[in-house]
Image 1 (spheres, rainbow, N blue to C red):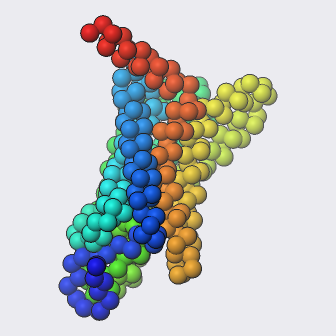
Image 2: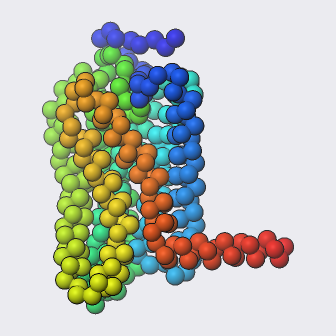
Image 3: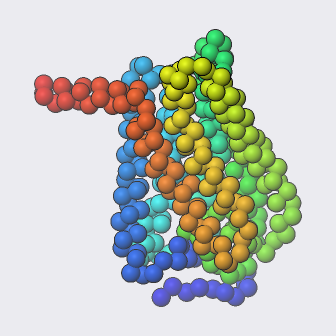
Length: 318
């Protein structure tokens, strides 16, 4: 039986995950469910990366961003799901403080990178729909690569600062994390250090690296929707909306659940609901991305068909 240390004592070296709080009899079902989700997520996003890399006509900014987004989703899933699956399988639900901080570092960095990538993708769609005459000059390959570099560097840099500050905390106990992964709020609760300066810095970094990209994404889509409404032709409106509908669905799914999780008050009644909403943006959003983009995007369909035909021809000829 796992030992939960509820005494206030210094030198906590391990945390214990309570997980989803599910009954033991449901654990085999949940293990299979999340295993399938992890496999489909990884395979789906890997397929998108291969299609973008292998098909010349997909070498445009929108698909460069999509390939990078798929990389982020794979990192996302691989940061959280393997440990979660091991816990559901009846493994050791403990995690060392160092590994916990490392898990949060990867998770938080992925969140930061994704917010910037979603903002860059919305800006790309804004230029394509609202400023089509200037699109090639304002969104060339050089600018595209610069935006991608900014997304990755800023995401990991901001979270490096946060994790460095968390590493200075003293953890006095209890050593129980009422969650299925290491998130910022549970870690802060377990600390017996003064969080005032930490909270101020996190608020500042959140505004720069999360809220600012969110407002850029939001304002881009206000302009996009306004431009689409002005198009007189129904076919023209439908064609314009089809170029950004997949991305808009991903943005709504990601930000709606993210906002709910971090705005809901942290009470015992809402804590379980909070964990359920966390599943949406940590586990289901990475799964939804490849499904949304492959099911709703004709260019991805055509690229997939050509790639399958090439593979079939290769194996038949060998």
